[in-house]
Amino acid sequence: MPDYSKIREMISHRIVIEYDTGARVIGYVANVRPNEGDVQLINLSKAIIEDSDGNLLEEHETFSICPNVLTGLHLEEGPSGG
Image (cartoon, rainbow, N blue to C red; front, side):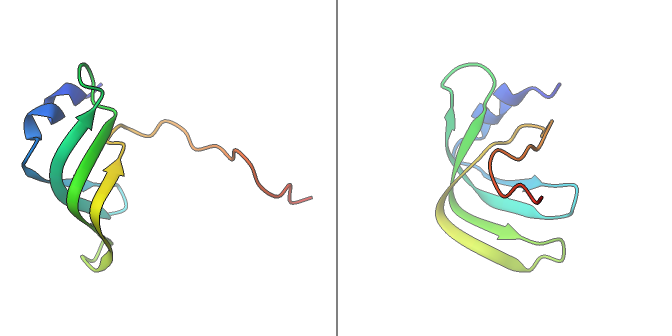
């Protein structure tokens, strides 16, 4: 398991979060949560989101993201499809 607490040392630094699809989130680490232990939320400033070709998809003055490894994706609510 990654050592998420090391992200705390990146406050005020510009970071790149890369995904298996090639998409990237880039921004300055403004804050992390919780205050102790493994980081579960990063608050970025001046964030940009790029696709796998480096094309700009979105820009945000502030953006919150979970940096942890995804272990599941489940439908919470929606049409039954039947």
